[in-house]
Length: 160
Image (tube, rainbow, N blue to C red; front, side, top):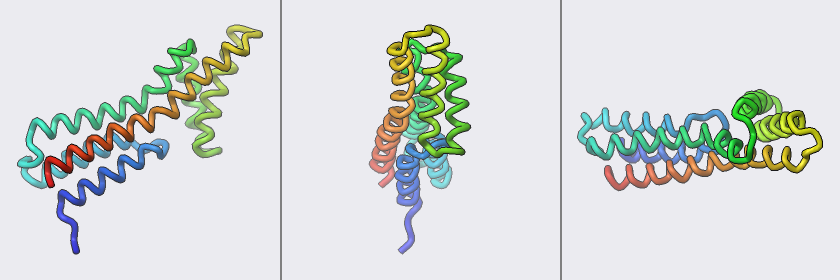
């Protein structure tokens, strides 16, 4: 039995929601493209213009949230933006060597070491700053998955 276009689109949205936990997969962008692709196949008759725009914007918001979560939480912990950006680059580089744990080690380690360099002897401050940054990086995919799950449900309700 073949899937209808709507069922295929919903299945893809479920996949993109699950892929929120896979590093370097632009899940929100893929969800937005899936919604637009489905709308294109229906001549933009479904899911309706307002719903289409809302689903695309929320999907892109999910990607943005995932991208900036480490930065925002790191700043809340007191780490400089430059340090978090460098830590993110180091984490992505270590991602290819160590897998997902490399992202955590790279970001957390960079923020920790830079914090100790700025404030020698302030180990508790360094731990707090790196913990905030790491928690944000780990929370980002969960938030993105919840948002994309909502997009999936809203899309399914509007087209099935």
